[in-house]
Length: 267
Image 1: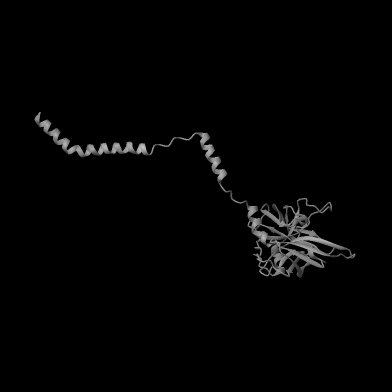
Image 2: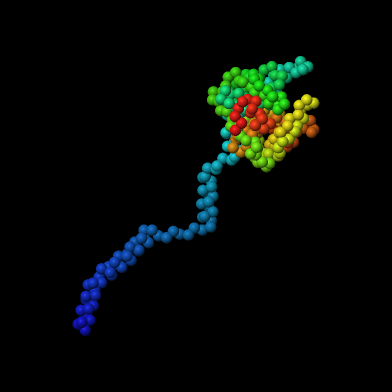
């Protein structure tokens, strides 16, 4: 019996550190559980409310159309013309144009400025100046204007590649329909290599067809891809009724053709 008691005493002396470690570990677990209790599961309603609050406080990313508009706007101009027609009657006109180089030269449609005695340019920053015609290509309805005074900050548009576009791709127009400055519309590319008779002498060929809404005043403005790059110059809209309003068919001269008149890089 003494042997067993002695053995027990020896075991207790030798086993005390082990027992103490177990006790300390147990107390540590209790303390951690007290200081860091398990999270209470959320109800479905609480989860829904958290999602709603997060969405309400998040700043949404801008849409493609908004980014396109902000990218191209500094390069857009409103064009007003005045002069006399062949009958000698005074008339005025309105159109659009786009700045294409560091000299602030403006690419537009020739019919916007043809026969004009005075050409006025209105910049997005509120500036205003006159301009003169320095180049023209009647067979493509393209003209280049040189402003008497460039804007305070010249921002040339970026040329895109119309050959990279496909039917169904997004297409945007920014211009001044009916004199409403800085208006934007959105649509898609509807076709390529279209032909459009202008009069008995001129037939425009190789045109881009689109369904982006354009109206009188959009002529000469840019047709844009989703990156805000110019892929064409708006030249005409289909008017079977001869009422001069948009029916879903517009045409643009590819920028690969138009930019060469101004000597601007194509892409």
